[in-house]
Length: 405
Image (cartoon, rainbow, N blue to C red; front, side, top):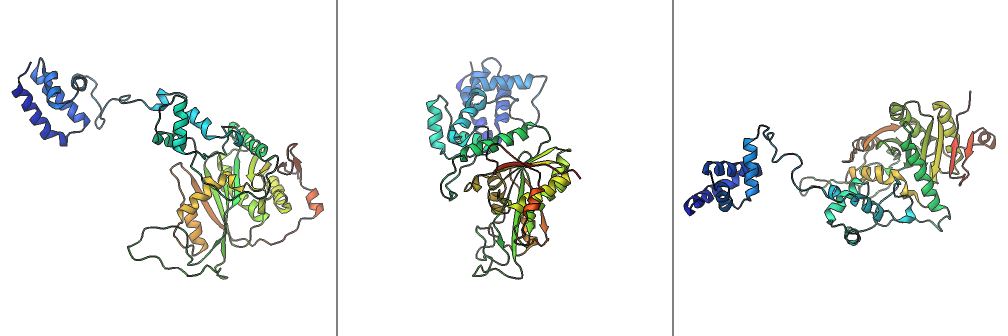
């Protein structure tokens, strides 16, 4: 054993160096001193520094090893505490089951979010034998594609009796595309029309202190600048999106043209000669299930691409459940917060620069076509549409096959 003078000397040296040493450096310094002292050196160094004898012995093994630790690493791979997902194998599944209420359909549905707080989830998990903190629960939820959502005013009248069944139908059709290689599924919708000009935009951005950006005191439309009409096409499987910014009117023809541009410029490159295309859309507006022009233009698209186009509409009053709302539009809004949308070019640039940590990529283009308002489709033209309605809610679920030339 070594006397108190040796231990005091070691303690003095360690305290003078500790501020400059990382974990690896402390371990190796302690190992070097212990080896220099010889018998009893590990005990003496542990007593002087407060390091465990196991740490010092690990340092000695590192110094004597023929396979030294790579530069920059503090410890060998596999060291440290295991992730909870590894020690509690059913933890992720338990969280997934808790945050997906039964009335919202299959837990594997791609249409999901959580409405439970982290504290409540932590208590429920603890009751099932899972010792996990709120920070870890939050990280797991993020990896599963959940986000914390508040209430939104989306209910319009009485719920349709097949409302939940339609959600489950859409989820099944999306999963079928995700399982089948080369079968695209997209979520489409129009974002809120934006008045162009030096108008106030919700949100804040960094600027020199005391120098806020000056904008108009009113939000009246500028007839010369007009409005921007963003219509989005979100590829559910690839997390990519296309946005057409219109300058005239939101019509069924404009909506289908946006899908056509997505297919021509993005989808066609990713999917090699698919036989079908699934579109999930709201039940109203330019892509509504009663819109004749929408169906007529989809027939033209089917003829041009040779694909069977399957459409599944969300029930009335449930537009915010559409995938594109919380996977694309919310990020676009966040990206241009506090920035006046002065022109169509500014809108296109801001939409195109939208990115997320999850890998979302957005492509955008200005659609300068003038779409006629109130364009009517006659009964004769409707009879030409090769439409097949699903046995379940055929108004909401149907497919349009290409017509042979």
